[in-house]
Length: 123
Length: 110
Image 1 (cartoon, rainbow over the protein chains, first blue to last red):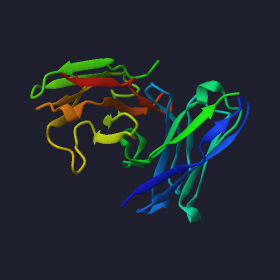
Image 2 (tube, rainbow over the protein chains, first blue to last red; image 1 turned 90 degrees about the vertical axis):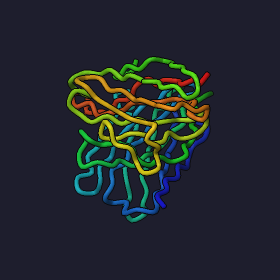
Image 3 (cartoon, rainbow over the protein chains, first blue to last red; image 1 turned 90 degrees about the horizontal axis):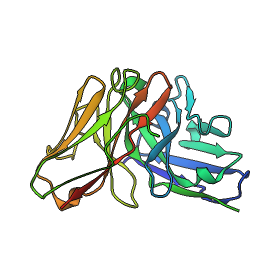
């Protein structure tokens, strides 16, 4: 059974840092790209970042987080990480990791999602 | 403001049909595949439609997807109260090198 489990959420101060983890199981992790998607309270889905599978490890970021957030993966641990620095109030959201399916970005879709991790940025 | 435009809400009676539109541009919907996601309050989104019109295993055929030009549509027939949820369209935006989501549509089954 495919599973994605986020951890590391919590309370951080503005300007602070937090690191989220996404632990994967039930599939050959290194063969899949992973997205981070967030959802602010009462708002819609907002894409955060994309890390490709191990063949290229291509990275993409949303403008709103580029330069502050860094996505990485450790295939030995079947995990993806989201390092969040210089946090702002508007980063408060539930953060989901999601597996990417599809042969290329033009046809990619998110077939499995984690349960989400809440990040609250507040002083 | 979302790259893809969806109506904030739609409603219909049980048993009826509803459609949810998703409008984009040539850099996203016009040249890439569209997927749709269903989300109930407090839970993670779930894949409903991929590759414009394909359903994952376990998704009933009451749900359908279509695409024409720079717009896509999600259709739901035989509406049930259990279909009340938020629905999001998504695709890759080639110009932005980013995943684009619609703002979401809240479905109410009256």
